[in-house]
Image (cartoon, rainbow, N blue to C red; front, side, top):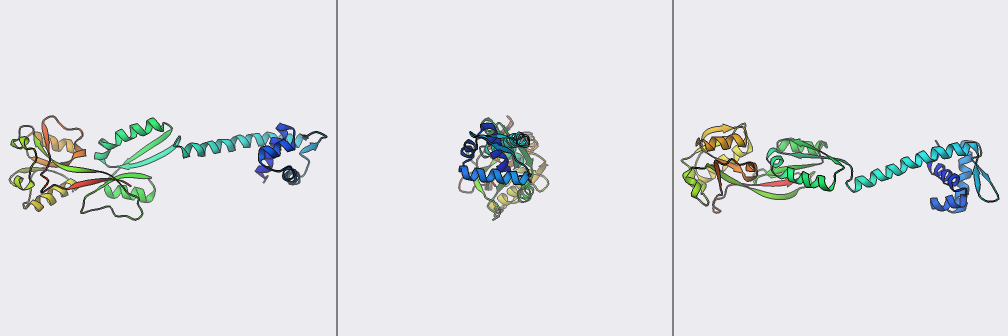
Amino acid sequence: MLNVRRLLLLTEAAERGSLTAAAEAMGMTVSAASQQMSLLEREVGQPVVERLPRGIRTTPAGAALADRGRAIRRELRAAEADLESFAHLDQGTLRLGSFPTASASLLPLALTRFRRKHAGIRIEVRAGVLDELREMLHTGEVEQALLWDYDWNRVDDPALSLTHLLDDPTVLVVSADSPLRTHTSVRLGDLADQEWIIRADNHPVADVLRRSCRRAGFEPRIAYASHDYQEAQAMVAAGLGIALAPRLALTSRRSDVRLLPFAYDIPAPTRRILLA
């Protein structure tokens, strides 16, 4: 296989008509350039330049090689430009993992701002629950992922680099006409006689509700198991019960429900939002 650097030297010499000028363009001494040209001629088995009193000119074989060298030089420069653009986030693909409440609240604004700065980057988003997102990170399906945890299920994985983005408090969701709506804050222990809307299918927020109520000294009475937060809000608005939810999950809040914070002396759990 031909030596690419020698081929580029020949191309420079053909264009400049001088081995001295080609050596300068390639960052070489004239003696080194002359030696490399001789090695190239040995590789191809025939002369590629003719030495003239002033400068050089290519033989037919040398001219053909110089034409190929120009094409190779273009491709190499394009490759360097590609690498430069990747380094400056001008092109490429960013693969993200996210979970539904982050995708509906935090992620759209972040993606909008990112696209304004890096319009050439293609973004792919994969959605999943916590264990699925961690698996995507480990298998390389995504490079970064938004994760969440509570104090009883901390993400503790030495293979992941974690950045704590923010805390997402748990709030109480009540109907717009609920007697509780006038409270500036509520104590969980005062809600023992309430009916509750819970998340179905072993959703993490169902675990939050049960843990919080047991910590306050009672077992929650479940009136309805919802499959998403909009459904939970609708059942709360209809007066079927009250609900717990992370604040970020209620970005699209119905007008007929109210959100109440918990008293600080017995707070409901706060989840961390992480970038892994």
